[in-house]
Picture 1 (cartoon, rainbow, N blue to C red):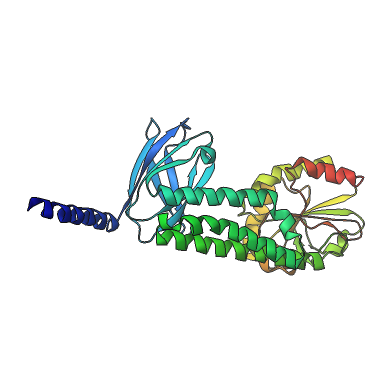
Picture 2: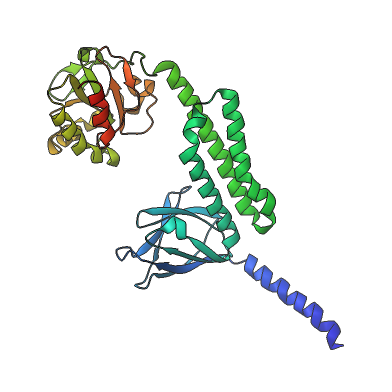
Length: 347
């Protein structure tokens, strides 16, 4: 009699354990960071969909452990000592995460409940990064038919793992990855169409779009047509832009290096009109008055900014003495190739 009762009981016990696991309303992450950056005391997990972050403490030995209660399965951006990696979590997972602090992305290893999903995620990220590093620039330059074929091939390549190994993964992870594939495809298509329009309107050798009557820090107003007769190196920036702030000292050095050359250095701020006083104070504080400082007429909606398809700053543009485009996306002042480019023009 006992034999007939033991087998169903074991089955019931396993079923109960699986149900308990599935019904957990939390996820546990834990692990060890070897070669630890001693200045880093926490991991930051950021949810891009909500802009909310969670901080997980790291002890002196590089160990960390945290319990998170998630409303929905989430793909987090995790940052540590300047490195970033992605992490998929959903309630019920108990995931061990180990890596070396001096080379996070190459040494990342997962173990436990959730390792299958996160190993797949890691593989997809590495495949995508390699694609963008080696093939993306060529992809954007293809004719439309070839572009679509190659893009579809890239998306299909990303999808192979889900097709072959999907039974290992939770449905939430599969759904999340399909959304990523769709977003990637839409983003690349957007960039391609943008590049096509740029080639039609602001390609090398074309006459530059104009700006008219921008407020000049030193008084009066200035239009692009006032600057003909010299090369024009334009910096589109704003006082609230961190990367723009980084470039300012390099811009000052560039202006000094070429101060006796046939070139105008023009910085166009897209700050709000009501922040004009802040713009003026920044110019003084950062010793920017050696170059020409202008204030655009309508922030990101300024026609000059829109005509150059500028949706991120800083952005640098180089024009020739006739107002024709040398490059609509010039190298930054902090890059050595900027000096090389200007010297190649005889400056």
